[in-house]
Amino acid sequence: MSIRRFLLVSILFSMSLVMTIAGFYAYHVSVHEIDEVFDARLAQHTRLIASYAAAEDIVIPSYDESQNWPGHKYENKISFQVWNKQQTLLAESENAGNNPLGPFSDGYHVVAGKHGDEWEVFVRYDAQKERWYMAAESRSIRNELVRGILLAAFFPLLAGVLLTFFLIRLILVRGLLPLAKIAEAVESRQAKDLSVLNFSHVPDEAKVLVNNINGLLDRVRASLERERRFSADAAHEIRTPLAALKLHLENLQSMQLQGDQLSSLVKAQKSCQTIQKLVEQLLVLNRLTPEHFSTTLQPVKLINLCHEVLSQVSDLAQSRQQSLRLDLRDETLTIQGNDAALQIMLRNLLHNAIVYTQVGGDICLAVTVHNGSVILAVKDNGPGIPADERERVFERFYRSGGDSHASGVTGSGLGLAIAREIVLLHGGKMRIEENQSASGSGSSGITVKIQLPA
Image (cartoon, rainbow, N blue to C red; front, side, top):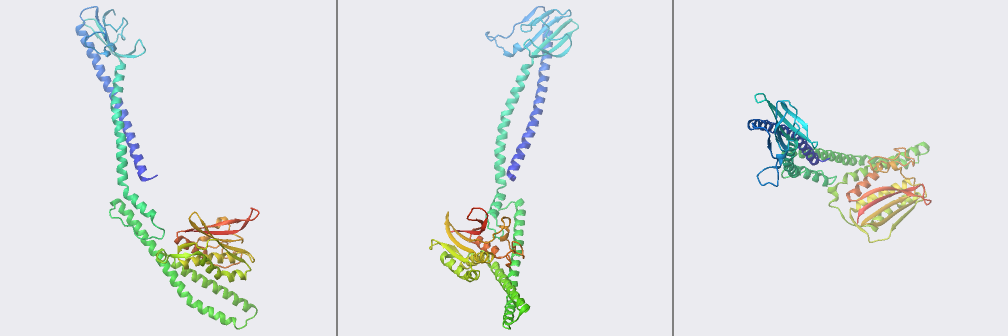
């Protein structure tokens, strides 16, 4: 959940909870106060009746809309009676009836009316005149008044909540706008862009975040620079003793060694070649930076690129009696890229396909166009790569099976990592797919596919 949504929901929930509690409290207080007012009025009416009901057989007519004198419809919901000590009815309102409105007991009483409704009755006994005075009022009056007050308060309250919702939303959007800009700036930048974040106006609360991000970027940039410098320095320093070692091994080869000595010499030469290749790859990896590539991109004709790389690996394929083919139907295809880097990428992929495919195998370099992208595919019919390792083989220094690979081929685990780095620098994608055998079941090698912008 976003901070804005969390704050909006939390504030609205808190407001609604507080207003609900306040509403219930106001309701109960209103009911209590209304009851107090109406009960006081009943007592007052009873005393007024006692002061005016001196004569017997007094009847007060009920409210009639057809008559022209002023009145109110609630008059029919208010009634009174006067009884003597012998409980004989002396006076009444027209709507009171002949039955006692309530019990002959001083105080307030709630009784059921003729139509099932409730009536509030106040009863008072005058000992001097020996009379009972009863004033009754239907509780529906009170209920209507409470409902009217609640409805009158509810709609302005609801409108206030809705207005508050939109105001809070606008305030949150405006208040969190700097965070949104920071998130957009971080999300839109390239993985290799480690420059600091620059904003002209940053709130105090967001300055800490920006400063921490910039500090992290500085540390990462310094760490990568140290690693790059170390790789370059180490590779350059190793090249000189390697060249000397290779020269000494070549001198030993001319001495016509026999048996174990010759075998040891061959192994030493292979190890020297492996180290030399590793040094070259480290130097290539050190040069793979966006800053370097941004100034070296130019149109590259794919037919020339493929022929050049195939000529570089053809001797190795022939030594393993393998078929090396090129499938490129449109010889005019051109992409924007770094020619030297693309050669390294294709050479690494073809070299891997050749050395890991069995003797007499088949390797094909295919170039096609699909949905506006150029697809370079290196296909072989070798043993393939397990599905759970097809992403890990792109990691630096990772090799499927480790040093004890089933093919017996030695390597450093940098070839595919360098190839993928070059593809990413060209804005492309790289993946490994399993080939299907002619029968449709089982593996028949793999295809490394590179998708580049046309």
